[in-house]
Picture 1: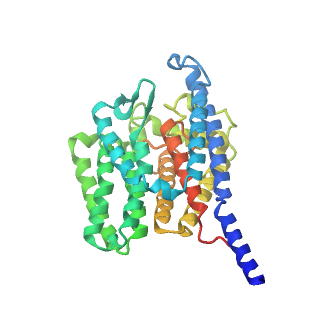
Picture 2 (picture 1 turned 135 degrees about the vertical axis):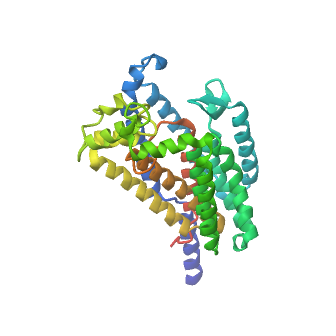
Picture 3 (picture 1 turned 60 degrees about the vertical axis):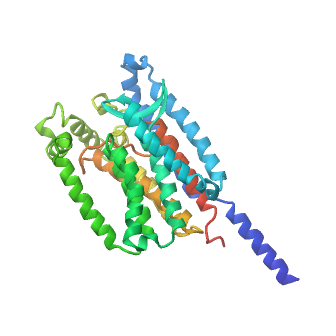
Length: 381
């Protein structure tokens, strides 16, 4: 009788813990989201206040960011409570749908700032490339988990590369930086599941050769200019090197403790300071200390993502958690590297913090899935 009661208590204990998610991860997500809203307002109010395009409304960007954050949080709550095994059933149809959307955006997409990246009607729209990050994670994880051992053969490896390559190629036509992120996500998932390391060495060599050839083509000459002005932004301080220089001024002028929240001077010079270059404003207003805290929060988030992946109860969950963690980590590294001029300038949002609707909503959806997976950890005792 005592043994039966102990077994029952153990089952109840396991059931209770299976229903709880990673509260440390949730806490970090909420902190980053709230911090992002504050920084979007701080970085954007002058830009919006002095522009008739935004009706001289200093709250123009922050109101939209709060609205998107609300939508994203609702979506995150939904994905936390929707078992990931149910979400898995829609992996294939989601992949087909996003490939169709990526084709359509090249044909009928809205041209904004010289690039076709948006699909939609009137003011309502989304970026298929942002959705593709999450969809690639779901489908590649589903495909590899459903075909155990597929990455142990070269034929299977090539098949997975083709699955990844289709959306990457479509995205790269108009948005190379996002294509790099999606590639990194797919490679991370495949690397975790593959027993053959040399396949990745070969793929890296082929990819490097292809990139070199692409950069030499006339249509991609402007990408070589990015490298040129990255190395020497002062060779054209008023045009090509302007953003880099102003960003470096912002980073340098913040010192240890910064100029104070809302006190940035460079946001009056930087183009769209609330977007890809928002980390520069963080450095200027909150200094090295504030920037270090932001980086630490991302480190904690990535650590929890890795832990969730390692403790996932099945291969599919492990690969999804790996892809989501890689998605955040790659974007953070690229954004901060560009802001500090550690790599050539490329458009990349800082997760949770940069202004943006599609990016924020689908980042929160991805976080919901990661929290969902954390509910089914193998280490429940």
